[in-house]
Amino acid sequence: MRLLISAFSGGLFGLGLMVSGMTDTTKVQGWLDIFGNWDPTLAFVLGGAIIPMFFAWRFAAKRETAVLGTPIPAMPDPKLGRNLTLGSFLFGMGWGLAGLCPGPAMASLSYGGWNGALFLVAMIAGMVAAVPVKSRLEAPV
Amino acid sequence: MIEIDWIYGLIGGLMIGAAAATFLLFNGRIMGASGLLGGLVDGTGRGNWTERAAFIGALVAVPAAVTLFTGQPDTHLTSNVAVIIAAGLLVGIGTRLANGCTSGHGVCGISRLSLRGIVATVFYLLGGGLTVLAFRHVLEVI
Image 1 (cartoon, helix red, strand yellow):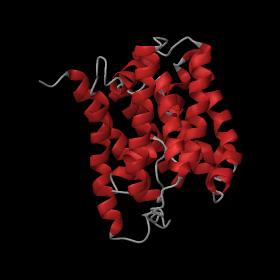
Image 2 (cartoon, helix red, strand yellow):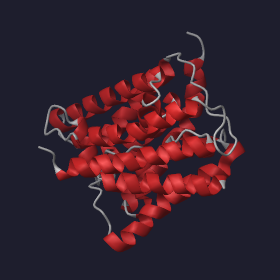
Image 3 (cartoon, chains in turn yellow, purple):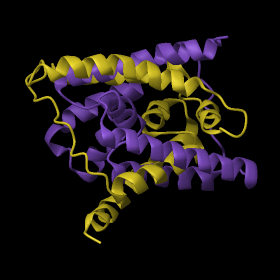
């Protein structure tokens, strides 16, 4: 059952990315291009996605476990550190350069061609490289 | 005036949010694309790797199945290999340092009014906006 729900969510996520146009890198770069020909589509996508999740969190707050028994994830420690800010900034740079974030990068594997697959390989390499960097940044200054 | 792209954006967004809500309410998991994949890459997600694999498998397979009927959508991805590699590395390292990307911090974090999610979103929008400004309008390479 857990696997069925996982696959359902993953599939719906992929469909949503396709319908919303977020697999088209020009729309993503257009959203980030505030000083050029700005494309506000992504605001509708993010806004649309936040609405069901807002109610899901409200509903989840009343219960301790999810339907299939796993505890509802606790609110993360609100501590902000260099990993969060620097990491997000670096991610944003890559997002702006190519117009792909991790979800669409995976979703476009079948139609993104060799360049899309190359992006995915580079992204996975970056994820491996992040492990030692992360522990170093977490160490006290 | 509402453009048709914005309506598709809103509908697609609602679908993404519904996917995240299902994943949370049934499986008790946060739908973060970078975290789901990253946990498989570095081994931190070994305990629930089947859920991660099922999610990612469907995330790849369902759009693949759709394109059999609709034809391949144009991603307009750059053909500049150096840009692709640099961008992929930055996205990979950045999302793992920050513990999240657009789906985890953006969709799941903001909707929970999580300070971390909101701060992360501000920083990746800043990074993306400045990068497009620099590389499109100043250096004119993307």
